[in-house]
Image 1: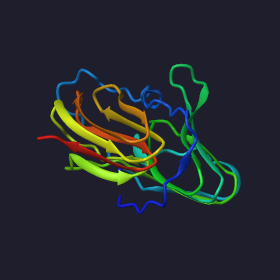
Image 2 (image 1 turned 90 degrees about the horizontal axis):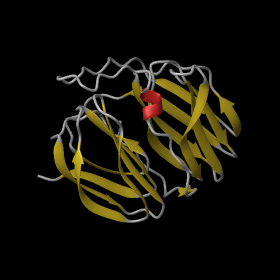
Image 3 (image 1 turned 90 degrees about the vertical axis):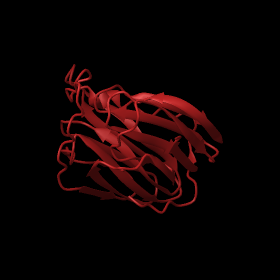
Length: 223
């Protein structure tokens, strides 16, 4: 996933659709029926990005790992959009998926996975921004808390378990899991305050949590 100090809550555009991770994963050749946990690939060096006001389209970038996280920081009072461009492995056509859609200062971490090089389209109406791309490593944690957009490390948890998930923000709150041997699973898609204990089947360890939020949140495995 990083200890991050987040700025005041970001104003978000309601109704923004974040791209399902499955589009990125289509070219990774995952073995959903494998009986043992797959080994995580070794991560390469982190990649840094930066820019200012206007539209920036990066060169094609090979991610540090096929499973990577990107921490973006934006200092400005207007729109900040980030999209990733990648080649659809089934058609060979370049497509675009949205990663961030914010208004005002932003700091958060988002998930991108691809074997093939990708490029990023960043639109900052007024302000400066930077990004850091890193491979996702393993973690022993099974409970987390934070603020804003975030990605966990790869963790191992009971296949069928209860999780307490909470959010105190006023806008979008979306939680997904992605497991190396299983499909992406949408767990929460709400607006505003949320607090529930829910049963989740995490078939295909190890897995990551992917959170999109504008406020404080927590994810806790229930004993």
